[in-house]
Image (cartoon, one colour):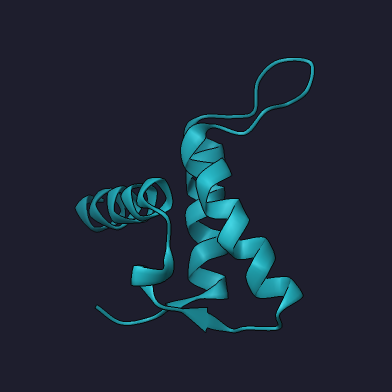
Length: 74
């Protein structure tokens, strides 16, 4: 599988945020957006433009794979 660009990761986070908006007084992100936001933040801090899917945590990888499947089904 090819690397995930920062723009693709941002699109996935926005997809999950649209599908399951933040909730509660604290505006907590859904599980998928939260899992993807961590590698996204690291990419920004480390000035990376892409990362390997293998570098994602299990939860983030599941969120990414589900995003790709759902996006391709549209």
